[in-house]
Length: 336
View 1 (cartoon, one colour):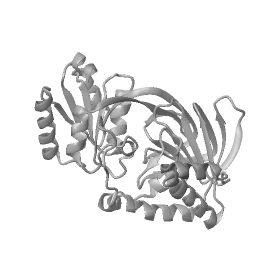
View 2 (tube, helix red, strand yellow; view 1 turned 90 degrees about the vertical axis):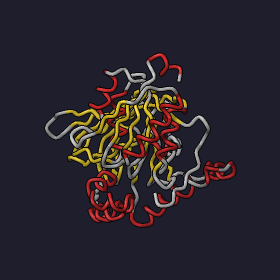
View 3 (cartoon, helix red, strand yellow; view 1 turned 90 degrees about the horizontal axis):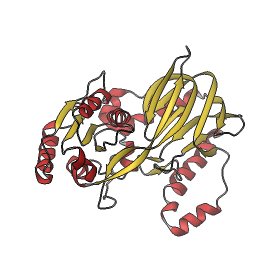
View 4 (cartoon, rainbow, N blue to C red; view 1 turned 180 degrees about the vertical axis):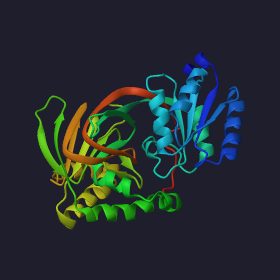
């Protein structure tokens, strides 16, 4: 990490104490500090009021060379937002339910010691940040940074309906109950949208997702062509009709995107497959949508309230992250 040496070799560990075994993490960090000749790290805990952004700003004031975010997706996103265009890399010790960015970067899951090793011995990679300007019912506009996906419709309702106590106990299984309750509502999202400089168009869908990258837990490639550093957004609209429509979407996303694309023959088969109307893909650098009624909105799996309009853009390669210098780590997804 030549860049780090120029800034001084001290890291900051931003830790969510409700997610992480702090004692074990500290021992692992100290081991690698000593092995790599780094100074003792600055340790700062997140709070309910501030999941990480303020802590990272404090760390930057201390001229640290590396920020390690130890926690769930909310902690990672808050840290990334504060590190935007700073030049200081972010390392991730994933300790949440989804660990969405860590999955897309093929970082170690369920192994904090391995994640710490990547933090101190890995290599820097520049990735994009998604930027959402969300207009509220009262006309106020809030800006969000997203790392993986943001969306409206069924997925946002699912996030809003998820029981946090159940999620803490059983992880992603808690979403099954939330999905069932959201599907029963039968509601659809109506919107007018504009992609880049194209004319406005109308759309009706159950879910509209704006992605910076496309991998979900269980190796589900919802956005199979999305690249995290290409300066573009990938948008998918899910608009099935009835149960058979959902089955076709499930087959396409899990079987074709998740399995067939892993082999050359499979990619050829996918290339010969006709698009399905229930699954519409778009790609561009700017996506603007307006809704006739307030809609639930989510960012990287966290509820973000109701919106009447969205403007999504890309900050190209605005964040440096630490990734494995040894290639893709082995991962056992059972139980995740």
